[in-house]
Length: 180
Image (cartoon, rainbow, N blue to C red; front, side, top):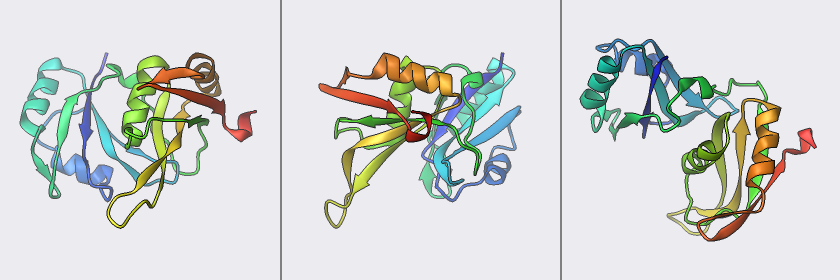
């Protein structure tokens, strides 16, 4: 079974070719840059290794290193299995769940995706909607979308997560309009 390593805080301009070049000194079996449904980078990647020793060396070598001016966060993927991760390909629709009443303290789609991935299988990505609250900092609108690899996983999410509590708020989940 492949060992999956999370690489976060990547610049949004990053490409898989950039990562392959930067990580060329290690024996990765696969490097997958996570992208949004429109093809733009999500700011993180998953790197797979067949050997645990190679994975540990990778974490030690690259955690905290600088890549295009950004300090990388490199750790074992919390999902613990790369088989649950499937990047969203540009133009290819994945099942989506609209989530409302998200705590305002949750400011990153990655945090939302991580929370849902702990509860339900098949999470591809999370996206939080923002409003322009001021000059310097956007503000969460308290709603967003979690995208899944299959319709079944999206339906399971609604069944398990609708009207559950997250950081003191009751969240509401419903299938994307296309699936209702």
